[in-house]
Amino acid sequence: MLKYLVILPIGLLLYLATLAPARAADADPPTPATVPQEYRALYAELATRLNGFEARLGDPEPRKIALATNLLTANSHAGPALLRPDWQRYNLLYLDRLQALGLNAVAVTISYPLLTPAFGDPAPYLRFYETLAIEVRRRGMKLLVEHNVLLPGYTLVPVQPYYAQLDFKRFTRERYAEVLRIVQHVRPDYLSLVLEPQTHGIALGKRLGLNDWTRYVRNMITNLAKDVPQHKTLLGAGCGSWEDPAYISRFARIKGLDYVDIHLYPLSNGYTDYLQRALDWADEVKRLDARKRLIISEAWLFKAAARELGGNPTDPRMFARDVYSFWEPLDTQYMRVLGKLARAKGFELISPFWSRYFFSYLPYGEAAQQALAPHALMKQANQAAFAALLANRTTETGRAYGGISR
Image (cartoon, rainbow, N blue to C red; front, side, top):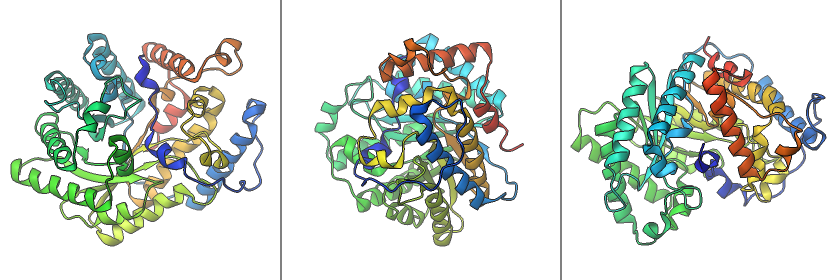
């Protein structure tokens, strides 16, 4: 697929680069002989942390969970490519394969200012997402929309000059107009009004704090109740597991907000166990408002050692690591752990991010692959995923995730 499919879940990375180097993990378990020597220490560290957390979780009681994943080919960062007929046919095939795996929901990212008339004609994009929503519902699946911002440097759409002229008042007004269009035309089951608030501020080049985002979410809820009082969309807000916990506490207190949403990425920076943090945040939300729902709209096993998170975690080489098939056992375990975490604390929807690995990986060791730059390697992974979708092939990772609720 096109370049944007190698777009990274960059939000966590903008914060992780500030972390101090961490202490080493505990004694490592045996590592499969299939793991290349250069990755054996990393594999062992991740396995140790996953094993320890899974052991602490035990075997929670069965609970119904909505299983979603990010529909990568519907991400707004693709810009005009979304409107190509072949791209839209690929979306439908993608949906069919996800449904066949056992998924009953899908997550889609719609990013400001793509639906704002002052930025460009929003009509074709709105039709695209309206049509996609109809196809999702036709398959009996739920739709989660994450309303984010286009990230300069990671989108095919030139957005930075537009951000330069924004103030918070205009940003809020235009964002609300987009939210209103999404609720009225796309009608998602879930709409996350803000996620990774610190990422938003960095992308926009604006200083936006906790009070700004609290006021923003409250205003969105109030205005929607006035303008479309009969809407059925559940409204949520949240942050990344690496961000300030105060966002979770503040959002949990907002009346009219239906759910709190978490993006869950690194296992640990050596000091903070981010999986445990997700459990603790769930308890905090329920303590503050027992009626609030919980979801995890993005998660993946981040293939970086704790000590690397204090360096340059935005290095594309870290994300290029994901493509290799020797990670499949750990990715499979991560799917199982994510399901147990959701059952333990009552998360009603979970959504792993890199859905292409539900269908294929690349073999490690071929000279041609190892000579590729990271973005070229991930492009090759996209091509392999497309071929697997056409051939109706799945990986153990995909089968494990689709079978969580069975």
